[in-house]
Image 1 (tube, rainbow, N blue to C red):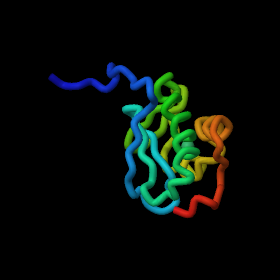
Image 2: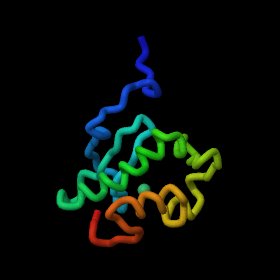
Image 3: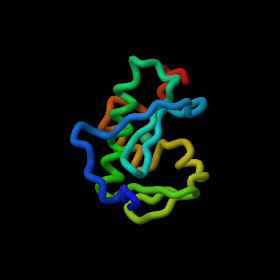
Image 4: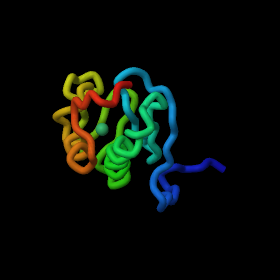
Length: 114
Ligand SMILES: [Zn+2]
């Protein structure tokens, strides 16, 4: 029988974290299933704060405000093309503003060095 992620009980200890080389400049990604991927090149001392940032996106996905498909991101029902400059830069979008505000991360931070 197929396993339906939408109905899966969430892990109370927090989302599962995978490590993978995501390429230059990408610190982490949140997946629609509520897991997150952190760039394996990231210095371990920064992993916790990047996880905190991604956890905000996990929360946004769980409460239904944020989702995406191959070409678009949807925030509270509004569609944003992934190629839009504001989306690519991740600065002035509502979902990133919330993630920066609720975690110990800031946009344009250069210390991560990935
Ligand atoms: Zn983010």
